[in-house]
Image 1 (cartoon, helix red, strand yellow):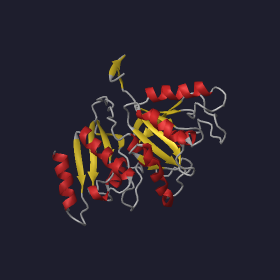
Image 2 (cartoon, rainbow, N blue to C red; image 1 turned 30 degrees about the vertical axis):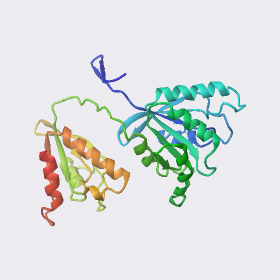
Image 3 (tube, rainbow, N blue to C red; image 1 turned 90 degrees about the vertical axis):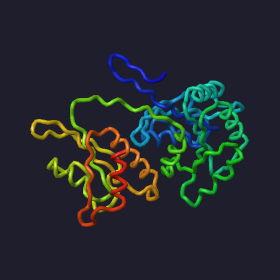
Image 4 (cartoon, helix red, strand yellow; image 1 turned 180 degrees about the vertical axis):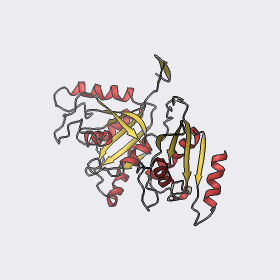
Length: 296
């Protein structure tokens, strides 16, 4: 199904991500980490997850559906094994993107290779999540898995949440996100933009006469675009506080990259753009570049 209209409401197709792999590699732990809830039971025993489990999750403000599956091993003697395997196959068919979870502590196994071959039969983006990489010094564990023939790979720790954002960025690399249609309620949308730490959130708080947005002297405190409705003189306005626009090379963290994307989206949907400049520093090259982006 794609975009459609039902009962006057906008219907949006939400991408689905299936987590698959051999038994006991941490699929359910990763599922719980991504959906930020303990929905799937995590245990060292094989065959705990049997049915497909679904949950809504969020990728930097963009919703997607997560599917947890049982361990894929046709030779296993756990109860209902054939049905568990079939449930995983259905999830693979249903999903838009696939994440193959492997165990970075154990290393590559013959069963990992079998599951990888199954996934490569379908024409869908595949990412290998090398789990149990509990610190950055262990990232070299991923090299053992390149022989699976899947080029996109991330070392992660489902338990500690290490590099989970990077995993999602890689998994959704080819995804085209369908935008929600914003209902026009007549409010004038004003995007407040500028370099980091020039006082955008401080201005919003002053206009509202309340501490609505988090303010600190640390550049990059605001990481999302925040919509705030305000009425002035009988007219409705929607203030959009945005993350500071950095130079492209200065976006080191994944969260910074997606904060920049959210700011770009705010620029696209606003009616009026207010560029904030630090009077003590004057007009910089960065401000000139931002002004050029606004005009384009």
